[in-house]
Structure formats: C-alpha cells, structure tokens
Length: 459
Image 1 (cartoon, helix red, strand yellow):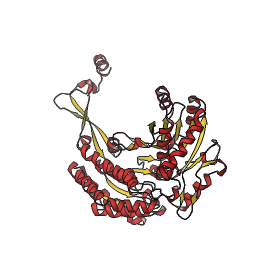
Image 2 (cartoon, rainbow, N blue to C red):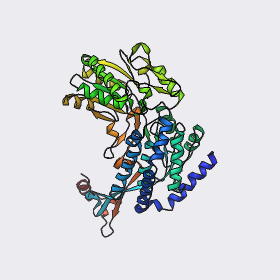
Image 3 (cartoon, one colour):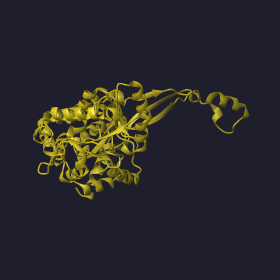
C-alpha cells in the first residue's frame, strides 16, 4: 500500500467508527466470536505458517501463540459486559445531589504494529483487546515473518470488512506511511530503536502509545535454589523459540558459591530437552533471518563457550550455547541477545545484585531462583522491571488475569485481560447533576457568610 491508499483506509475506518456500530457491546461480542471461530478452524494453517517463518513445532506454536490468543479472546467474551459498564464512584458532599461515574469509551482508530518473534500471538492478542474495547483496527505485522503475516491478512479479511479491521503488509515504507497518519492510539511491540521512532512520530498528533519493548532481563540464582529445577526451567525459558523471546532470561547472575554445580545442571538439561545434537532436532527452531543469525554469532566468544556453540548457516540455526567467565564489558552483555546464548556471571551478595541491576536500563522481566522468601521480597521491591517470576521463567505473561508490560527503557503501558481492555479505552469522568437543588454559594458575588460553609464542604 502506498501513502494515499493508507490515508484512504484510515479515513474509511474513522468514518465507520463514527457511525457508532462498535459502541454496541453485542457487535463487539459477535466480532470476537467470529475471530475465535476463524482461528480455531485454521489452527493447522497457522502452525504451518509459523513453522515456515521460525521453525517452531506445532506443539510450541499452539502452546505459545495460538492457544494464548484463544485464551485471551475467551477472557474478553466472558468479561466484556462487566468491563464495558459505567462504574459509579463516590460523590463528595460539595457535589450533592449528583451521580458520579466513569464511562469506558473506545479511542477510535487504532494502529497495532507487531513483531516477528511471536508473529501470531503479538498481532492477535492486542487486536482482540482493541476490538473488545470498541475500536477499529489497522494491524501492521512484521515483514520478517512473511508467511504468518500473509495468513493473518487472509484470515482477518475473511472475518471483517476493512473499514473495521484491516491488515497492511510490507516493510519500512509502509511503516513510515502508517506512522505519518493521525491515529487515535498506537500499540507497538518491537525493538527499543523502532519504539523511539514510533513515539517521535506519534508526538506530531499527540497520539497516546503503548510500547512493548525488551532489554536484558536478568535471571538471578542464589545458593538456596533447587539447582536441578532451576536449570530445567531456565533452559526452557532461555531457549524457547531459540531465545527469540522478549522476556527470555537474557543472562544468568549466579551466586559464586554454586556456579559450577549450576552449570553442570544446565548442561544436563540442554541435552535432556534438545538431545545430543540439537541442530538435528525437528522441534528446535531457527533464527529468523541471516542478519540476526550473523549478529548473534558475533556475540559468541568461542574461548568462553562451555557448552554448545555450534551453528548451521544454511538452516540459520545456532545450538543452545552457554558462556562462562563472562563480564559486563563483554560484547554479549552490551546488547539484548535475543538468541540461544546464555552468558553466566557471578555475584557474592544480594546487595551487589540489586546495585548492578539498578545501574542498568530497566529490564522487561526479572527472574529469581531462591528458597529465601525474605530475599525474594527484597529483590522484587528494590529493583525496577516490568514483570517476572520467582522460581520460574516466562510464565507470568501467559495469563489474562495480570497485566503484561514494560517499565522505563523496556516500554510503557500494559495489556492482557482487564488491562488490555483498559489500554484501548478512554475512561470519561462524568458528574450527572440533579436539577432540583442548586447551592447558591458558589456563584458571585461571594459572601463572607459562606466562608465557613465552603470550608465545611471541601475539608
């Protein structure tokens, strides 16, 4: 699509929005039901598309993408009527006799820009939330996941007219053209560099944004941790989708006294989960493209590799890799890895961990493996991060009951479930004032007699 076509599409959606159809909760429910049925009927096609783009197995595709989207839609269908209701709030005495309430209202025409690493989940999850809140949506999936993006375009065009929900495919030119339009809300998931550009462009129209970015998410392991279980869960989270997960444990910060034992458990778990030769495992995926393959390979310092390190340029695969004796000055620690490389660093005290984590940009996630509840409370209270887990990885984002989002450099705003509905809604504050009583003291000319009354009402 060129800029003129995109402008026409935005105008068409705005015209449709102001017709008021999406204000009807029943209309939104029917849209969500149609979307859910379409996804359920095309599960195999979705799995094939994700396999083509990222090499994910059908089990992993359903577990981490399709199933989570269906779960989010189910949540919205169950709760949409209660989420959409006006909420009465306390009215102060000064406003007697009135009814005060907040009224959720859709923003209008929403732009959702999604990434390539979870191309179905991170496109359809925010789409479902935006539909539930009553918006029209233009979805821009990533050009780096062409099979999934093309399928999303087909599925959504079968479900909805383009004045309600539309998909714009393409690359940088289409992104630029979209960001030059006047949207009522922009929801972006991707890198920090592109997130800054999205925010800059949005500022021209004072458009509110949600930015779901990333960062170097630490995984701390202390001397009280169950090392076998910790290694099992860390290996799962780190190498899921070949490390191409925004909330993957980026690096391991391990208490010095148990590092060697932890490394032995990690090596056992990699073999247990991926086999002796992971690059021949049909369920082990690939790096999205050659550019990212070469970038990740360049982060691996062979002299510090203690497990893995193999790669196949033809299949764009890098085996699960572990690096030891890493410092915060090494290349692998100077950027988000976003690949199957696990650097291991050590610390002596929890205060050292807190000081170091807080000296770095705020991460999207933080994980802490410990049996010490006091230490867990101290770390989670003292460090700034988007979300995380105690004694597990990844799973905090797999629920519609909690918001998911970044903090500081890892993003702003959140979504999933109730928070997703709120993200795509503006809450109007309204006072319904009755007409049978009108207190005269607020009107000029002010009288000294009213001084005591105004203090009484407003204290």
